[in-house]
Image 1: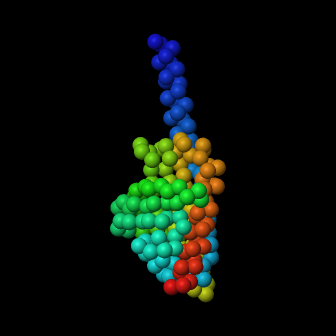
Image 2: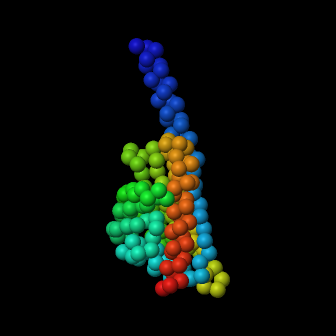
Image 3: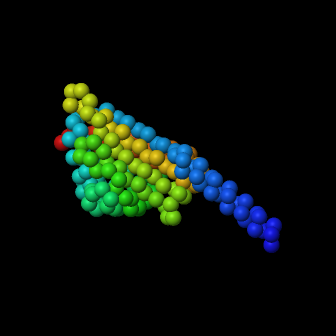
Length: 169
Protein backbone atom coordinates (compact mmCIF):
# COMPACT_ATOMS: atom_id res chain seq x y z
CA UNK A 1 0.00 0.00 0.00
CA UNK A 2 2.87 2.37 0.81
CA UNK A 3 4.39 1.89 -2.69
CA UNK A 4 1.02 2.61 -4.25
CA UNK A 5 0.64 5.84 -2.29
CA UNK A 6 4.17 6.93 -3.21
CA UNK A 7 3.51 6.18 -6.89
CA UNK A 8 0.17 8.01 -6.75
CA UNK A 9 1.80 10.99 -5.04
CA UNK A 10 4.53 11.06 -7.69
CA UNK A 11 1.97 11.01 -10.51
CA UNK A 12 -0.01 13.81 -8.87
CA UNK A 13 3.10 15.96 -8.47
CA UNK A 14 4.08 15.39 -12.13
CA UNK A 15 0.56 16.22 -13.35
CA UNK A 16 0.41 19.33 -11.15
CA UNK A 17 3.84 20.45 -12.36
CA UNK A 18 2.87 19.88 -16.00
CA UNK A 19 -0.36 21.83 -15.56
CA UNK A 20 1.41 24.76 -13.88
CA UNK A 21 4.01 24.79 -16.66
CA UNK A 22 1.41 24.79 -19.45
CA UNK A 23 -0.66 27.51 -17.79
CA UNK A 24 2.42 29.69 -17.26
CA UNK A 25 3.58 29.24 -20.88
CA UNK A 26 0.57 29.71 -23.17
CA UNK A 27 0.57 28.83 -26.85
CA UNK A 28 -0.44 31.87 -28.91
CA UNK A 29 -2.11 31.95 -32.32
CA UNK A 30 -1.56 35.47 -33.68
CA UNK A 31 -2.89 37.06 -36.85
CA UNK A 32 -3.10 40.64 -37.99
CA UNK A 33 -4.35 42.58 -40.96
CA UNK A 34 -4.37 46.25 -41.94
CA UNK A 35 -7.84 47.26 -43.11
CA UNK A 36 -8.80 50.24 -45.28
CA UNK A 37 -11.60 51.24 -42.90
CA UNK A 38 -11.77 53.15 -39.62
CA UNK A 39 -11.79 51.39 -36.24
CA UNK A 40 -15.42 52.52 -35.89
CA UNK A 41 -16.37 50.78 -39.16
CA UNK A 42 -14.48 47.61 -38.21
CA UNK A 43 -16.00 47.60 -34.71
CA UNK A 44 -19.49 48.00 -36.14
CA UNK A 45 -19.04 44.89 -38.30
CA UNK A 46 -17.30 42.92 -35.52
CA UNK A 47 -20.08 43.59 -33.03
CA UNK A 48 -23.02 43.11 -35.45
CA UNK A 49 -23.16 39.44 -34.55
CA UNK A 50 -26.63 38.94 -36.04
CA UNK A 51 -24.94 39.32 -39.44
CA UNK A 52 -22.19 36.74 -38.79
CA UNK A 53 -23.96 34.00 -40.79
CA UNK A 54 -23.87 36.32 -43.83
CA UNK A 55 -20.10 36.79 -43.91
CA UNK A 56 -18.14 35.13 -41.10
CA UNK A 57 -16.51 31.81 -42.06
CA UNK A 58 -15.17 31.16 -38.55
CA UNK A 59 -17.60 32.37 -35.88
CA UNK A 60 -20.83 31.41 -37.59
CA UNK A 61 -23.06 32.37 -34.66
CA UNK A 62 -22.64 34.58 -31.60
CA UNK A 63 -25.39 35.51 -29.16
CA UNK A 64 -25.66 37.22 -25.79
CA UNK A 65 -25.08 40.75 -24.55
CA UNK A 66 -21.60 42.22 -25.02
CA UNK A 67 -21.15 43.16 -21.37
CA UNK A 68 -17.91 42.68 -19.42
CA UNK A 69 -18.38 39.78 -17.01
CA UNK A 70 -21.24 38.38 -19.07
CA UNK A 71 -21.32 35.16 -21.03
CA UNK A 72 -21.93 34.81 -24.75
CA UNK A 73 -22.55 31.71 -26.84
CA UNK A 74 -20.39 31.21 -29.93
CA UNK A 75 -20.44 28.53 -32.60
CA UNK A 76 -17.11 28.10 -34.41
CA UNK A 77 -16.38 26.29 -37.66
CA UNK A 78 -12.88 24.94 -38.28
CA UNK A 79 -11.25 24.28 -41.68
CA UNK A 80 -12.66 20.74 -41.71
CA UNK A 81 -16.21 22.02 -41.28
CA UNK A 82 -16.49 20.80 -37.70
CA UNK A 83 -18.55 23.06 -35.48
CA UNK A 84 -17.98 23.71 -31.80
CA UNK A 85 -20.29 25.56 -29.43
CA UNK A 86 -18.89 27.23 -26.35
CA UNK A 87 -19.83 29.89 -23.83
CA UNK A 88 -16.93 32.21 -23.02
CA UNK A 89 -16.92 34.95 -20.39
CA UNK A 90 -16.35 38.49 -21.67
CA UNK A 91 -13.22 40.13 -20.27
CA UNK A 92 -13.14 43.37 -22.31
CA UNK A 93 -15.62 45.24 -24.46
CA UNK A 94 -14.00 48.56 -25.34
CA UNK A 95 -15.73 50.09 -28.37
CA UNK A 96 -13.44 50.61 -31.37
CA UNK A 97 -10.49 49.15 -29.42
CA UNK A 98 -10.90 45.63 -28.01
CA UNK A 99 -13.22 42.64 -27.67
CA UNK A 100 -11.84 39.84 -25.50
CA UNK A 101 -13.20 36.70 -23.86
CA UNK A 102 -12.03 33.54 -22.16
CA UNK A 103 -13.37 30.06 -22.74
CA UNK A 104 -12.51 27.12 -20.51
CA UNK A 105 -12.93 23.39 -20.75
CA UNK A 106 -14.15 22.35 -17.29
CA UNK A 107 -12.72 22.21 -14.71
CA UNK A 108 -10.20 24.75 -16.04
CA UNK A 109 -6.42 24.51 -16.52
CA UNK A 110 -7.08 21.67 -18.99
CA UNK A 111 -7.69 23.71 -22.15
CA UNK A 112 -8.40 27.44 -21.78
CA UNK A 113 -8.42 30.01 -24.54
CA UNK A 114 -8.32 33.78 -24.15
CA UNK A 115 -9.43 35.21 -27.50
CA UNK A 116 -9.04 38.86 -28.47
CA UNK A 117 -9.73 41.25 -31.29
CA UNK A 118 -7.70 44.46 -30.97
CA UNK A 119 -8.16 47.47 -33.22
CA UNK A 120 -5.49 50.13 -33.64
CA UNK A 121 -6.10 53.32 -35.61
CA UNK A 122 -3.59 53.83 -38.40
CA UNK A 123 -2.93 56.93 -40.54
CA UNK A 124 -5.39 57.74 -43.32
CA UNK A 125 -8.40 56.28 -41.49
CA UNK A 126 -7.13 52.70 -41.60
CA UNK A 127 -7.17 50.06 -38.87
CA UNK A 128 -4.81 47.31 -37.77
CA UNK A 129 -6.81 44.29 -36.66
CA UNK A 130 -5.04 41.81 -34.39
CA UNK A 131 -6.90 38.59 -33.72
CA UNK A 132 -5.18 36.20 -31.38
CA UNK A 133 -5.81 33.51 -28.85
CA UNK A 134 -3.67 32.48 -25.91
CA UNK A 135 -4.20 28.82 -25.18
CA UNK A 136 -3.13 27.41 -21.82
CA UNK A 137 -3.69 24.20 -19.92
CA UNK A 138 -2.42 20.65 -19.64
CA UNK A 139 -3.91 19.49 -22.97
CA UNK A 140 -2.62 22.40 -25.09
CA UNK A 141 0.82 21.00 -25.99
CA UNK A 142 -0.91 17.99 -27.56
CA UNK A 143 -3.15 20.19 -29.74
CA UNK A 144 -0.70 22.76 -31.15
CA UNK A 145 -0.47 21.19 -34.58
CA UNK A 146 -4.26 20.88 -34.85
CA UNK A 147 -4.72 24.51 -33.74
CA UNK A 148 -2.24 25.72 -36.37
CA UNK A 149 -3.87 23.66 -39.13
CA UNK A 150 -7.57 24.07 -38.38
CA UNK A 151 -8.00 27.24 -36.32
CA UNK A 152 -5.33 29.73 -37.42
CA UNK A 153 -6.47 29.62 -41.07
CA UNK A 154 -9.97 30.42 -39.84
CA UNK A 155 -8.65 33.47 -37.96
CA UNK A 156 -7.08 34.63 -41.23
CA UNK A 157 -10.26 33.91 -43.22
CA UNK A 158 -12.34 35.84 -40.70
CA UNK A 159 -9.90 38.77 -40.79
CA UNK A 160 -10.18 38.96 -44.58
CA UNK A 161 -13.97 38.63 -44.51
CA UNK A 162 -14.22 41.28 -41.79
CA UNK A 163 -12.08 43.65 -43.87
CA UNK A 164 -14.25 43.09 -46.97
CA UNK A 165 -17.43 43.63 -44.96
CA UNK A 166 -16.08 46.83 -43.34
CA UNK A 167 -15.17 48.22 -46.76
CA UNK A 168 -18.63 47.43 -48.10
CA UNK A 169 -20.36 49.30 -45.26
